[in-house]
Image (cartoon, rainbow, N blue to C red; front, side, top):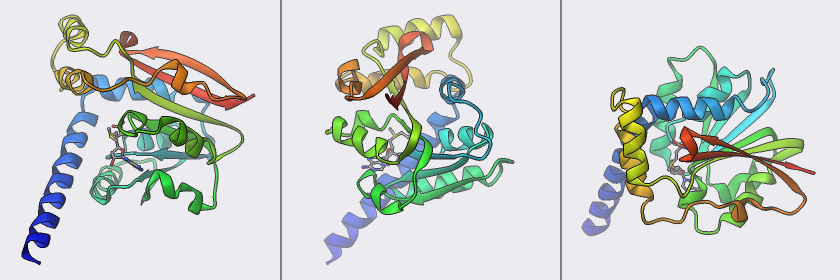
Length: 217
Ligand SMILES: C[S@@+](CC[C@H](N)C(=O)[O-])C[C@H]1O[C@@H](n2cnc3c(N)ncnc32)[C@H](O)[C@@H]1O
């Protein structure tokens, strides 16, 4: 029983650490800029709905709200949602947050004009299933925005970018991001190739990251 309690405490501490870490990352200048550029690939919202899945501390959700959407961030980790709510409380644009896993999206009942997933596919094993789950939350004519690092996200390329653009304003985090990607498999154009959907790819951060827009043909 005591061991179970200790395990729970350890998981909770890891979760808190992870939320703080992602919050720190989301405050890096390059990180905010590239996500801002990705969000501005979509037309201004004028009150239409945006779901941000795997929102972490809520950067893309807040940017979507600033872009005129009624934005809701979803994450399976309750500590991420607590952090996201804290972050949004200082903002003028209102955004909402809910603890929910990608597997439970169907239970929402509602659909959105835009669904986004930033750095979510990388952490999920079955990327095709995840893409179908995300697409199933779109209204007819809706758009899915996926933001993921590319094969170019390597420590040497991150270093070159930092030498050119500066390490300040938390930009050094880019190097850490590249290290975390060193042993994983990047999301590829083949992953994004879903039948009956048109794909538009925009390179960000000199090609280290791509924003993908998917919509039904
Ligand atoms: C790498 S972080 C990215 C956070 C944020 N989107 C960003 O770009 O900074 C991945 C996030 O996805 C969440 N996540 C992982 N698996 C998930 C799942 N199955 N359903 C919902 N969220 C998930 C994690 O809790 C974490 O907050």
